[in-house]
Image 1: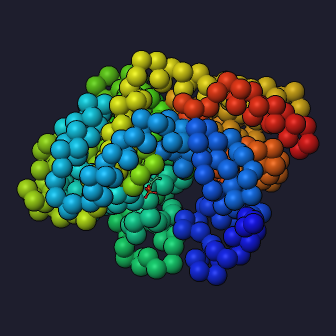
Image 2: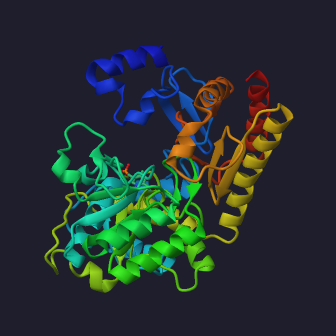
Image 3: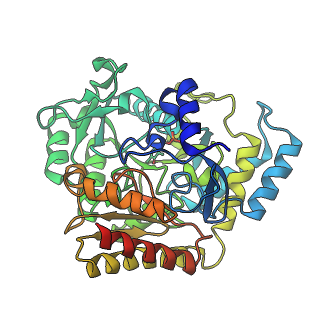
Length: 430
Ligand SMILES: *Cc1c(COP(=O)(O)O)cnc(C)c1O
């Protein structure tokens, strides 16, 4: 029988690091990645037949759990009609209509195949529309691996960043300004000094790539004001938070707090593909009409709007609109976080948690972090030990403390109770 260890050895001979996306390699937590053989509902089974309660959900897409029967049926039916045509289909219109219905900040949407592609295209469009080059991003936010976005903060405030990857020439990131998340003074200064050169501010409104950190309402309100004053576009990267933290995505949460609030552009992925390669960027008709074939900003894709992927995404988006879906998902996620916090307190372990909809984060710290530095400052050794204690007990969390977690509609109260019981044991052993 193949074991995780034997598969990992074999994989490393033919695939760099044995994985097709780095975080899967368990580098942060150590040990051997589990090679997954199959999944159903809230569970995954590895090559050795061990079962795990899955809190990664393919890093977000599997909001209905694995292999939802109605999604499966739609995918099978679509596959029988053909995998890809390189020509428009009615289902692309249906998916676009569905996305726009749930994201009223936008009037048009273009479908692509990955979040990286969507984010990269959104920036090109923001630059093409404004005629400006510079962009602001925040440390700890991930927007895919496009060259201009693989950048960390420069040495001083308002200096441009350094590449975080070899192979990215410094000139490529010279237009990217990296600021601290939730720091109002910094973004005010950036706009004061170079506001008329900034094409867009890109942000994960609820950041899921530095565990789980919310942009504060005053911070978001100020960003919106600054963008308005200086003619920059506010781009919400909702690849993770979209249709995951609420049916109206994170933007609906800020719209409740800030009168009239909406982003100028939104980037979606993960949930809108339901586990298939599909992502999108969306904006007003005026901005989107700058895209080819109507306008001068080029963007294209052989597999964009793929008929099997759109069947999967469309069915997923329809199912999450059922009465009470998000209420139930939120309650389940909340009970997981509350249960873990209580178990940690009983064991005398400092743990703080946060969650929204079906997305959560927990930190071995006294207070919720507000930015990347604070996320990374504390608890990594404890997290890594906790991670393996949970994995040994059949609970599959993200293998790095800077990743958010996900609950699906397939997780039962029993799954949550079993997870909390496992966590209570793990906390006692820490
Ligand atoms: C996952 C993610 C991306 C990248 O999406 P891919 O499909 O992996 O390219 C971009 N932005 C955010 C916020 C993400 O979570």
